[in-house]
Image 1: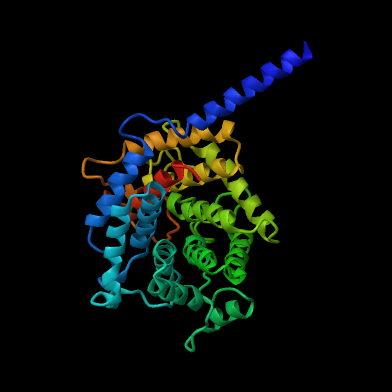
Image 2 (image 1 turned 90 degrees about the horizontal axis):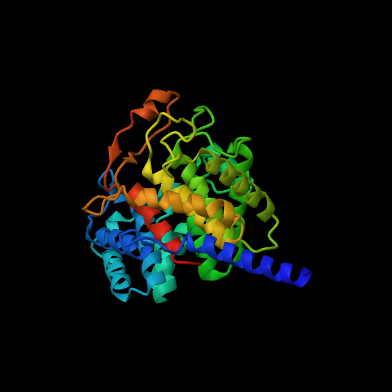
Length: 367
């Protein structure tokens, strides 16, 4: 009797696990990650460069480029890989003036796409550019101000600002440098920064204010942390001294995000404000963090897979006929005024939204 019971229990457990896995693999036609990823990746190829003040490549373009390349590699789309290489090629010649200067977190993260392209092509030109951006995040310039020098003296990047988006901008390029070189200094740098930001900025509920003096949980701001932590944890050696602290911060945030997911599957412009509007870029970032955690075994699939599926299904409905993600909050500086966040304009096709949708599509295709 006991053997029969145990056998039945094993079968039921297997079926339940299989059902949870299916939640992230079986989607209706038109909303599969293969279809959505292809639409958005090729749409990116056709787009013009997004520039800071008409001068330098914007970080949102780099984020989208990274997403398109990861999707192309995952799906073995050689045509797309070649198109993404071709889009970069002018930076070695006539578009070299568009390369961001190596003096700010939002600029230095440009190195991540060069390092990703190196991993695909083994073209040393990409490696040279990418490592220059990674290394200069820790090489203190002669004109550094006292605060920047103080951060460097403590072993942090001189570009440290304690702004939540830094934990994507710094970690993404250091992560890729580690993957390219195998040099632990890069992953150690990223982990040290992440721990400091968690200790300084994470609230007891696991979320993050837009800024220490602006007590609002702005979705996309928090999204950079939600993405930065699992991306770092995926590369961080299992025996790394900072891994437990970062995992603690990640799991605490995921629990809080799940509690604030709206019945529609989306998250709002301000995460904890039920009367605010659903915002797509933040939703995509949180969904990516859920998917990654489930696939890595950090999050319980029974608890989080239904939430991730619900979010993805809702997200897809915000892509218009031109392959633009709609309802994307525009770039937003901090302001201690709740109404300010409510009234922020919303864009369609903004790369802040296109990028995390691509990240989600690629993540749904498996580890």
